[in-house]
Amino acid sequence: MKYALISDIHGNLEALTTSLDYFSSRGQVDMYICLGDIVGYGADPGACLEIIMNRADLSVIGNHDAAVIGETDINYFNHFARTAVLWTREMITIEQDEYLRALPFSVCRQDLLFTHAAPVDPQDWDYIFNQSDAAHYFKRFNESVCFVGHSHVAGIYGSNGQMSHLGGKTILDPDEQYIINIGSIGQPRNGDPRLSCAFFDSDERSIEIVRLDYDCRAAGKKIIDAGLPAFLAERLSIGR
Ligand code: ZN
Image (cartoon, rainbow, N blue to C red):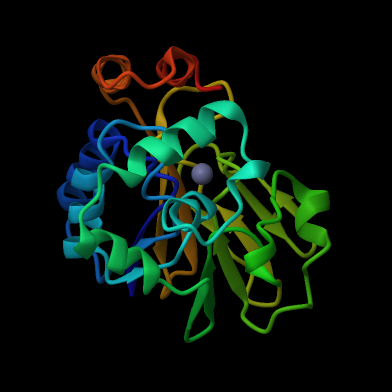
């Protein structure tokens, strides 16, 4: 099976469509998977939701999605995130609200686990930024690979250590357990403004973290035009 994986779109339509065009150009994809945070920060929450509702074969809830439907306390959000959540609530339709309400925290398919935050207690919204964050969870879930987003920083963390994901395919060891953070479509934060997504081939057990240029200036301009905090636009161009 070939999986197209996206996460943390955050209402960034330009980045989302660029990633989907990329996956279409690659040829066969058996499953499109969205790891949450469809909305929050960006200026196109409704359009992004509509695309994911039509396109994703499997989708899980993120903390910003939960905040928009009132299922997470936004007092823990910073000022910019909170402003965007309140604005987003006014922008989505009843059907889109219902779609978010029906999303699960995690889904298991065969030997794979998909969730937004961490493999264990995903509703606590813990972050996986690095190998030591990941190490806390190995052997505490049953599947051989868990795909996550949430931190907006991509990484391939194995129970025997971190693997490089720069430049092409990484082949996973069948005897190891992995947590793979696929990074963010709509708001990358590792100092690289290119969007991040992933392609997983379960037959080859290969994973590719893909970085793509997209029109971040157009996405930023829409944020300003919508009256959202300018910081949310500025950070797109620096990937922070
Ligand atoms: Zn996010």
